[in-house]
Length: 522
Image 1 (cartoon, rainbow, N blue to C red):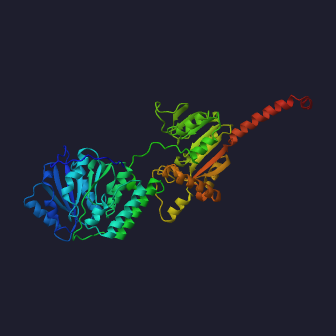
Image 2 (image 1 turned 120 degrees about the vertical axis):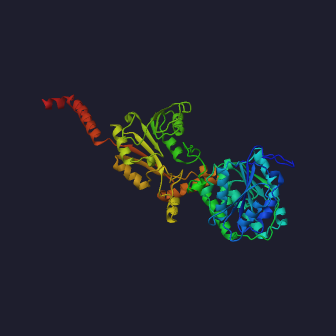
Image 3 (image 1 turned 45 degrees about the horizontal axis):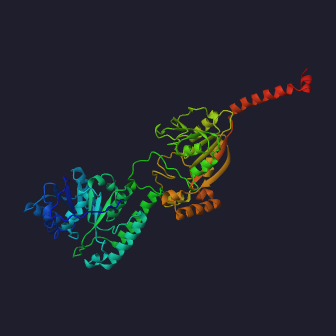
């Protein structure tokens, strides 16, 4: 989220700058108030570029009829009045309005409540950041001046609850908003089109979930002060349930961000084409880089963009990268030669026996048939015994066990349950796969979770890494986030038999060269 300094605009009229505005009024049991709300829409917004939409959410009273009555009287602007076939809830009603705005080519949609709690008179001021292209969303905040909220009639318990929840949410999202709980919102339809708002709840914490999506998408949010008004309207919000729902949404969003849980509503970014380096702390990358022998000829299978391969080159290694997707020559790291190859093909495009070390970093879990792949790799190594270094996720990690215990097992974009993973391993199952494929395991250890990637490289994250390292010593199967293996490929039986003939022939030649053996042979 980006915060912006705003210019003041004291003009008495509003030019929308060619933009089309939808004033969207959500209404439920608003028969007595909705006509008054309509009459308060500023005259400066009554133009052909502005439309007002009322969606009555199946109210048991005559809210819909009140809207039609205003429409048929002397309505000074284009007014559309709709009624849902069944009650959709506060969030569900918003989804309909935003979809209407997108489908009908509006540039900005302003959410106004049919009970009159939020002043339509503030719309011209709230529109200014869009006209100047300074915002993707504008929130009317009652808490920029906290004293004004109490003076406007906000009950003390709501004021305290608002402050507590907002502070918690700012801490979770690393933002600095004055209020998360105002219902006075304006959005650009371009921003709405970039987030999956239709996946959000139909309940009242829809407003929280859409803020999370905007922040995660790094869209620009601007807050402007609005007056607080509490009249005799009926509050349909269960405060305790709302607070619980907000807390749960924030927790799920944070876990999603840390790749410990996947929630499609918070999946707001395009699929990543590459993974970042994990350097500066104990990780699979630092372990592999440390294990690379200086001057070795290295085959980096599943090299991606060659970020780790570049670190091998820095150690004096000669590196060949092999992957289905390789970087363009203009962005390829110096000193690395790349081969584009589908790793699920059974043959290899290189002579494996020429390499001293073979790196398979976070790749074996992506293979359709890892057993066959390891068999073919060993066969291609011929009589040479290259060192194979493998890193992969540990499905036995305590977090995934606890999630499974809670009935949660869903795949995501990153982490242990990355949706591109086809096979998952524990320490035991990976060891058995290697042994049965003809490899001798020389080192097997656990790698801690990449806390610095999730929390930033700070004192807390580094402390968590050290704690994780201590826990791994107690139980690597339970507390290791990843598995690190150094193994050696045995020759196949065919290769070993061929090698046996060669060694025997050499030994025979040496033996026959000795006088005593030669005499005995005669």
